[in-house]
Amino acid sequence: MDWRDEGIVLAARPHGEGAAVVQLLTRDHGRHAGLMHGGDSRSKRGIVQPGNLVDAVWRARLTEHLGRYTIEPVRHVAAQFMDDPARLAALSAACAVVEAVIPEREPHPGLYAATGALLDALSGGERDIWPAVYIQWELGLLHELGFGLDLGSCAATGETENLIYVSPRTGRAVSRAAGEPYRERMLTLPSFLRPDGRGGGADDADFAAGLKLTGFFLARHAFDPLDRGLPAARERLDVLISRSSESMESPSADC
Image (tube, rainbow, N blue to C red; front, side, top):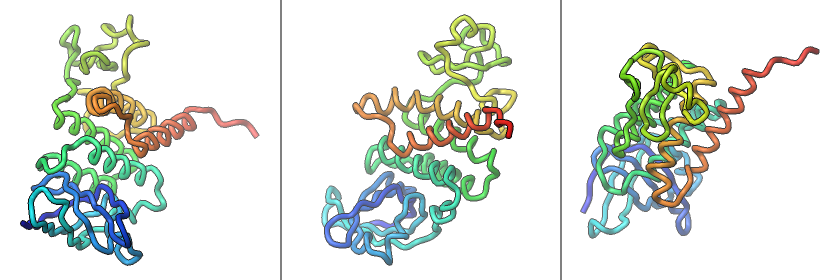
């Protein structure tokens, strides 16, 4: 039994002497694991860094076996971000979330394409563009899991203007007027997700609000049923961006 596919490395964990169990998100075979001999060696460890694009051949005697990977690098993505903590944190978060919530060996070609687009945005996007792409990617993941949000019109009035909240109960947008009496319970709808702001970028405050929004629904629909919290990498991204947002909002002290 064997196949060849392109994939995105999600994780690589040491196994035995010098080997690693590698998790890939593949184009045609979904999230798929395999044993890579030498995968934990100094010469090959860099190939299986989370976020890297690879060409993979998987072989096993039986379909249900773990099988073995032969992996060749196509594009080293993670190495680009060693001096950019925010992009590296976003890359790590995306890989960790996919590994945790996508069932193994279940094809998700749409998610694979969207994750490739996210990697492109992280690699080449401006500082205010890739955060918006990241949040859109998590919204797409929620949709892929069957829990998409409805952010196009107000849940109470149907209007499409002045949407600034999201109901934590329904996952639908709510207008300023309709949500004002309940604002303490509402989630913030970032400006770049509103009908009049789509396609725009996200500053750290909008990014932080977006992470809180998608994180809330990922936790509720994907992780709570598994009796697990959000992955540590996703939590680190949240903390990093929240701190950056708070530092931008704090007035500078006079010298």
